Image (cartoon, rainbow over all chains, first blue to last red; front, side, top):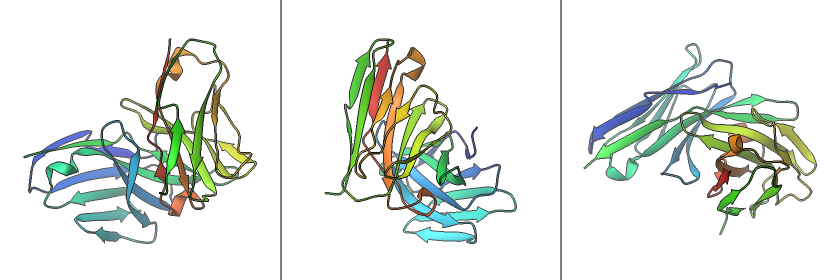
Length: 113
Length: 114
């Protein structure tokens, strides 16, 4: 079952604008992570936010987490053409032996020059 | 260089012909995992491993097997591949439990089952 659901599915913006992507999930989480994927390549970790944190920053990235609404948002400020990629949120759950990971379907971001 | 490697990168095979996709990491990570990626569905976890000889099912384990005999290797085995297993596969590893650790991904294996 899909735990993380990103919104929107696709987003097109002009270079220099801000891009906001949202992620909603269904059950309680321990942590939430955001990853980026350039076309057909492996995912690259961007940022992690723990369930007891509300906001985190890393360079041009800002992540918020609202556990009461079971949602998170990723803001990329002053976007660049190189930010064109798919962005995924991932949440962790406890399985039989440890934690397994659930990724959402992703938001495809296009930054136009 | 710290990395996760997968082989092969591309594979075309026929229904029923057993295959193995290898995954290896050189970072001494305890946690390893396999995902498949399909259009519109994102990544779905197939199996994961907490450490040597400790594995568990993810969300879509049917039709797959794994083993973790050594810390660095985590092969994915398709005993009898079917066309619905055509997908892009990623192996990933992290230092410990994936929840609060960054996962490092391999470059992917594109599998086509005819």
